[in-house]
Length: 249
Image 1 (cartoon, helix red, strand yellow):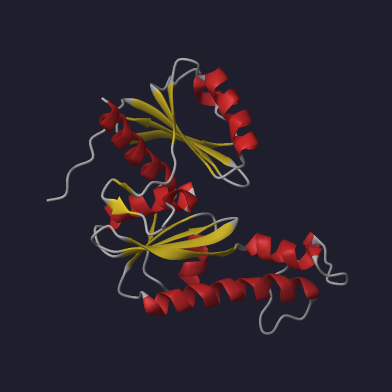
Image 2 (cartoon, rainbow, N blue to C red):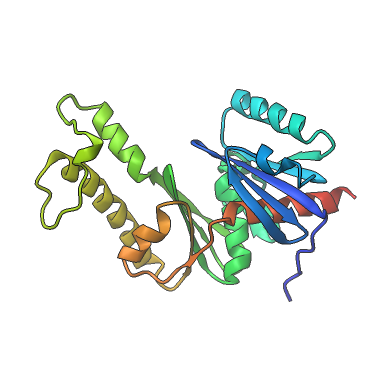
């Protein structure tokens, strides 16, 4: 029987520092009480965390600056920096060097394993599209990273001299793209869909758990049955952080 993951701390603030934004998720026991992006001060007067779980894919320098700002806001909270491990919460990391797996991918894999309770494909579609595969035994089998929609467009525009268009030119259309704007945006869209469709053919019998701004829209177009969990990384951080706190007691 699977062990129930009981909260080790009453009030926790999870800080998920991604490449383009910072997401703050406040927990009381196992319940999420608020979620905000890029600014936690608005709620600070009403929430005083016992502990902060910090997960960052940013550079050491950027992470240190963010750490200092948040700790100044909540000086009495204990701080835990989460890193990818060989094993946590019943999930085993596929990487030979576990710390090289992005912490957001690791936490998403942990949370999805407990959400799906079986073989699971984890899709996080934001700045990058990240896929991780975890079997029902909690073995992380590996995964993929590809540029997200916006990143693909930016790479194309920054590396070509004559592909240019304004935001007002990006309009919906039918049939083959008949403008540069449509050619780029719809071309990148088709590339992402093709990638996801190939993965689905290989793992169609797995449950799909998705997060990130573009995930539900892309997979919906493919007709893939899925569970959307916008707070997947935060849920994984809560599980892993609590396990570390219990182990240190």
